[in-house]
Image (cartoon, rainbow, N blue to C red):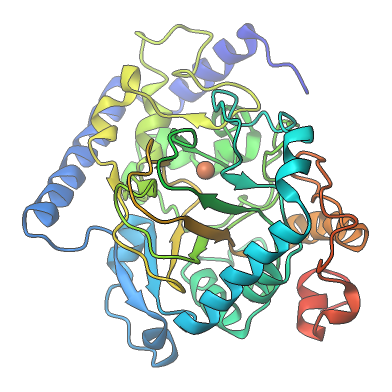
Length: 411
Ligand SMILES: [Fe+2]
């Protein structure tokens, strides 16, 4: 891992402060915006209205969506009924079977501890499974429904600018990720609020500095989180379990019923919330060589010490049914509830949106080799559980579209 010295952080802070005519006033302006957004969220709560915009899969097919502005402002959306319940119930059972016949739990005990991304997470039972190539995951990732959903999500972004086309919103590559199976009573998986897609990179990387220039340069009102320019060009510090792809949205598909208090996802549904985190770090009460607790190679930290205001906006997503999906922008701060107080397993398959662009293609080509060998994808700890697993999806079972999405053949 490349080292980043205290002095370098001091230099970056001086540079970013200089973008503004008065970085205190600039922060105040952003803080006021956040306060207004929090009031809107509070009002929705009082009125028992959905805070996270919700649409149905059928609305996408019918091109009947009136809440686009809400989705852009909140930076997240729930898309319901993407898959039929019966189809998902069957896939959930097949995943159970895959885990059992391959003695995954015994394997996992032998190899646990390889994944250090969420280093505070201490667990002797797996809740997130290092499985990537089950039939269940493949069927969801490569489904025709996902093609429709991801095209629609990708097209919410500005993907073209005067210099170049950042990505093709209508061609999707596939990023193999894990599954979550959270058992009732589990209290080991809670994840404190964070962002993926870069921690200190968001201040130090030259392309992130361009992406966020409007925020630092007193031009917050014009910052558009859905402008993709340079998002494909950021360079992450090398670290296990840090994503090396550009996701227009992170997301998951529910395999079982789950709601608030079932150990589910929480979001701060403010698409421009990152501006608060970025400019907060420039204030003088933060030690000059620190960035509000964010550390290299870890998830970006959002904490009570520095971001108490923003954290007031953290809400649990509503009840999800099998086949419902949730999606959030890569700048949207999210967390996982500490405890699963419900009675049933809450299972999800992680599927994000990774449109066709050079960054994503480069990664997918590396990933495709791992697929052929049945190994863990390059972004994840090399646990390689599935090499000899029965029922692992193989090349000859893939459709032509799936092969394109995995960069095994040309689009
Ligand atoms: Fe995350």
